[in-house]
Amino acid sequence: RLERLNGNRNSIMFRTAKVATVALTLIAATTLTTTSAQAAERPVTVPGCKTPTSKSSTPKTIKQPAAMAKPKAKTLTFNTNCGDIVISMLGNKAPITVNALSTLANAGYYNKTLCHRLTTGGIFVLQCGDPTLSGGGSPTGWKGYADENLPKDAPANYPAGTVAMANSGPKTNGSQFFLVYKETYLPPNYTIWGKITKGLDLVQKIGEVGAYKMSGTQAMYAPDGYPIQMVEIVRASAR
Image (tube, one colour):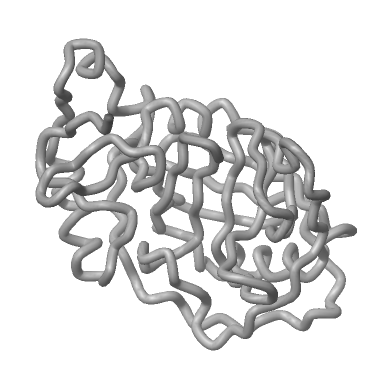
């Protein structure tokens, strides 16, 4: 049974930027209660996280890098409102993807954006990289690029610490990615391009707080929804 959240919160599946912006304002102003004493003891924040100030925005227009360019950056760092997340990038195994994300990071594409999806049941990922918060945002004018470094179809083929691309089918990669914080099985359709070397514990704490979705006007705990602890990428850089 889904547990109730007090206040008017919106779900992960934002339909428009306007709805998302209004929802984020409401999120910051509400508190969490549940239908049982046990549930009421659940945390609603991660200690040390600052209040985010970002809102939904139109994706920036950034020139897409050439597919054959050799990656130069080795590390991608996300400075978030909750702390730093550092990723070692797999340029030798996923060069197209690493080039694309490095270009976006260093052009400021990810700056002042919010992670829009958290899953806590069956699969365990925090998804980020969409300035629109709709789940469908991608860099303006970009063409989807090839999948790379796909794992085998096997149990726990996306282990904790894995960073992979989110997509809607073959060759639809853009800017969205997910951070795996607990062993996860997925169809082998998502490019693995990095490994978290710092901040995995932080993502795990965000996962422990949980996600929510809307049931009418009531926000409810859910295994797949918007993170209760809002996660803001303040700045991203690839080096």
